[in-house]
Image 1 (cartoon, rainbow, N blue to C red):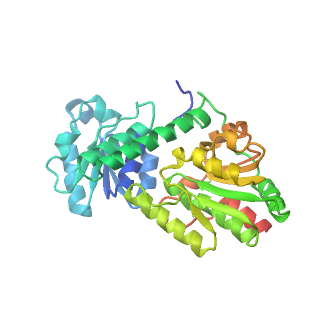
Image 2: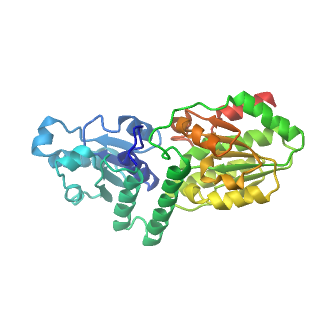
Image 3: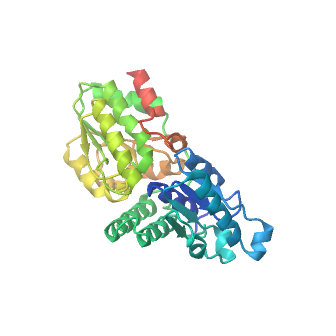
Length: 352
């Protein structure tokens, strides 16, 4: 499929994967402006992102010498435990040998040959994971597991997500106070319901707030709470799951952990069966609601929360009655270690 709307970059995906692997310093081998926004955001999450700042001279004569200089400076200045060199379109076009450039570095370092011309951003994830496996940072079993999960997540996006058509009009969705009012009406009427978080990695720090807010608003209601917070995956993903699960328990959310934070794309049928067989009349689904096929929520009033304005229309097509967007979620969940209040959670608390 050819898209006429912006799509996630494989370079950025490689950077985030390096972070999840415990990389302290990532070096973007390209112009200083490449992936600027995400590079700055990732520094909020504790990973230093440097650039070789390639310019016209390097475009002609090559930039391997400049890369060696930046790597040496990174080792001296930051004393990292792990480093990663991430390629860019420029590095690919001029034929830079990233593996040779890192061969003399003392710090454990991987080289990721990647550019933004891949049709899917998961190519950047896979390239980084393969480099990590080659360096024995992860074993072959985890690499195979990640490939399966990435394929499942990609399929969900193509079937029911923001990649399901060449262009989707952005939409802010249902007004949060309208949805919250209706949700509290159902809860107070005694209607049986279920609250599900199926979130992608660190986004769970805010999506989990929908569950805590609902519990605070209706502490005595009989609501089933489920979240994908089992501890599996790359180092940061496991740590995030543990922190969020422990906080939910401290905040008296009677939680059932189903699946892991990197399994969001593969949990659709499992969560769907749970929702359908629970005999509920309403469901609150936060994170990646479109992972759950529509067949499991037929006849159920669904309140879904996403962070993508282009996900609103597909969710409505799935029959979700109330679709809300947490627009600023991603920058607010980088570098945090505890649950972050969401707009919907704040509204729900104010109404309760």
